[in-house]
Length: 73
Image (cartoon, rainbow, N blue to C red):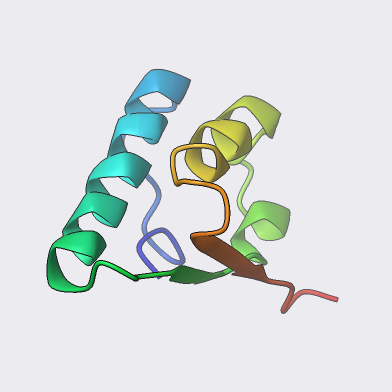
């Protein structure tokens, strides 16, 4: 996972959104049907991920192209 143990350097939601979009664009360049699968527990343990940052990342990928695994529960 891109952000599993690597916190983005800036917490600006627009920046977070641009990171997510760029990551997914890279995935699509290798596979047009790419689906991003990520671990969701980082949203629970890392105080960086507040609601605006989470929303920015999760909404930066087209609907149906991001699966978040609940590994915390």
